[in-house]
Amino acid sequence: MADYDRRTILAGSAAMAGLATATTAPAIAAGRDDKAVRDAIAKNHDAAVQRLKDWIALPSIAAEGRNMPEGAAHMEGLLREAGFQTVKQVPTSGYPVVFGTLDAGAKKTMGIYFMYDVKQYDPAEWTSPPLEGKIVDRAGLGKVMMGRGAVNQKGPQATFLAALHAMKAAGRKLPVNLVLVAEGEEEIASPHFPEAVAQPDVLAALRKCVGVIIPTGWQSPSDGGVAINLGAKGALELELVVSGEKWGKGPKGDIHSSQKARVDSPAWRLVAALQTLVTPDGNMPAIDGYMDKVRPLTPRQLALIAENARASSEEETKRLLGVSQWIDGMTWEESLVRLAAVPTVNIEGLVSGYTGPGGKTILPGRAVAKLDLRLVPDMTKEDSLAKLRAHLDRRGFNDVEIVVGGGYGPTETDENSALIRAQRATYTRFDVPTTLYPRLAGSWPGVVFTGAPVSLPAGQFGLGHGSGAHAPDEYFLIESSNPKVAGMDEAALGFVDFLYQIAAIG
Image (cartoon, rainbow, N blue to C red; front, side, top):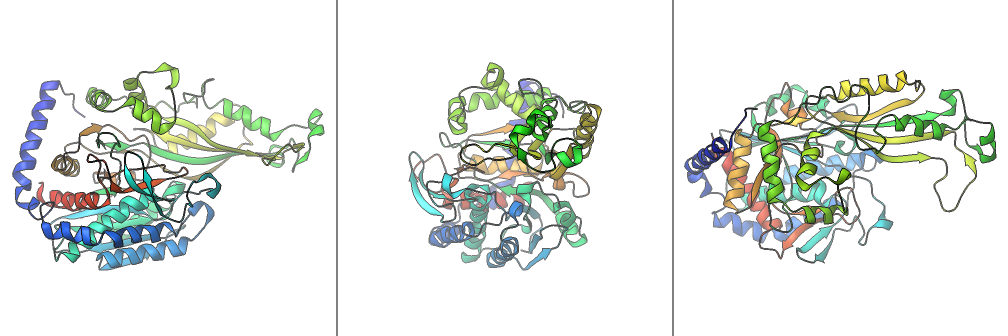
C-alpha cells in the first residue's frame, strides 16, 4: 500500500466523494428514496421479526453436531422465500454449504456470505431464554431481540433477507444479481468451507462478483459510527492434549491424588508446555519464529488508526468489554494499533479432571487446552501450525498432541475498491460517521474470497446494532429509540441502498 501524506489523503477523499455523487445519482432514486420499497419494509416488519425469531429457535451448533441438517434445510428455505431461483446444498467433508443464485438480469453481480451455525450457550447464564428470541427494552437503544445468534449473524442476515423481500413486494428488480454461500462451520473456524467454494459451479459464480460482504450490525450505540475494516485477522483453532498414555508417564486414567507423591501429572505437563508459548505476562507470543512473517503496519494504516482513535470512545469500548485498562498501561491509540498489528496466542479454555462443585481428590490422566491463534499478514495457517509443532518438539514436548479444529489466513481489501467505495457512499447517505480501520481483530473466512482463485475484495457491511456475540444475553436491535442508530427496518433499507451503490459505482 502506498505511503500518503495528509494532503494526498484529503485530495483522494474529495475525489472519491465526487465520483460517488456522479456515478450514483441515477441509481439512488430507486434505492433509499423509493417510497414503495420503504413502505414494503414497514409493512413486512412483523414478518421480518418473526423470521428472525424462528431462526433463533433453531440453533445449529457445529461443535456439538446439533441440528446441522435442519439448519441447512432451513437456510435453503429462507433463500427460496427471498427470491433465489437456484438453491442447493454443496456437500463437504464436514457439514454442507448452502449455495444460492439470484439472477436479476443485471450487469453486475454481488457476492454474499452467510453462516447458519451459532456458538454454544448455557441457558443458566442468560436473563432471557437463549432460543426464545424475546423482545426486551434496552436503555438508550430501544427494543432488542435477545437470543443466541441474534447479532452473530442471524440478525444482520435476516435484515438482508428483509431487504430482498421488500424489493420483491414493491415490484422492484434488484439492481445486481446475487451469489450467496452459507456455511455451517464458521464457529469452528471453517475447516471445510474452501471445499465448497472450489466446486466448479460455485467458483464460477463467485468469480463473476464485484466483491463479497458478510452482513453486519456494528453501529456504535453512542454516535452510530461505523469503522469499515480493510481486512481481518486469520484464525487457527486447536487443542493441545497431554495424556499419561501418550506421554508414557502419569496415569492412563484418573487416580487418587495421594499418588502425586510418586506419579507424574499430565495437567502440570500441559501447564509447562503452555508457559513456553507466550512471554511471562502472557501478552506476547513466544513461539519460535511465529513473528517472523508479521508485516508491519504502513504509515497509511497508522494514520487510519489515529483517525479511529479520535473518532471513537475509549470509555464506551471499555464499558462494552467489561475491562478497566489495557495491557501495559497502553493509551487508547496504542491499544488500537496493537489490536490491528499483533498476532495472538489465546487460551479459550482449560479442561482436566474434576470441575464440579467442591473438590474431588484425583490426579487426572488427561489435560486439554483449547487455543485460538490470530494471524496477521503475511502469516498463514500452515506455517503457524508447523512452527507451533517445531517449538514444542524442540523443548521436549513431542508427546503433546495438536488437534486442529479449523483455521484460515488473514484478509486484505483495497480501500479504493468498488466494494469499499459503495460502503462509504451508503454510510454517507445515511449520515453515519465512518472511518476506515486497517484490520478487524476478529476473524472470518474472507481469505477464501480474497485469495486465489476467487481473488475478490471482501468485507463487512450493515447498519444497525447488536452485541454479546458468543456471550450470554446476545441481542440485536429491532426498534431503535436512538436517532443515530438504525433499527431493523432502516438497516434493511441500508442494504437496499448498498446494492444500488454497487450497481452504480464503476
